[in-house]
Length: 89
Image (cartoon, rainbow, N blue to C red; front, top):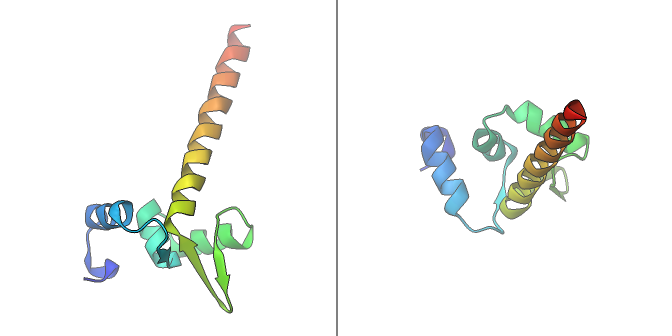
């Protein structure tokens, strides 16, 4: 079944449980993150999201995208903690 025919939850389950070294397309990453493909490509051009350039194509390693998201979550929680701590001081 292609990702275009799946619901969001089915795509999440397939992407979370698949091979961590599998290469994903921008469309698959966009569905997984619930963003648009244009956003994924913009993040790619800005070198914000880990990607694998393959000639004129670009792919995204599942494990790298998951690690990138975990890093963003960690950074945002640290920033929030620092802001709250400053307010109390």
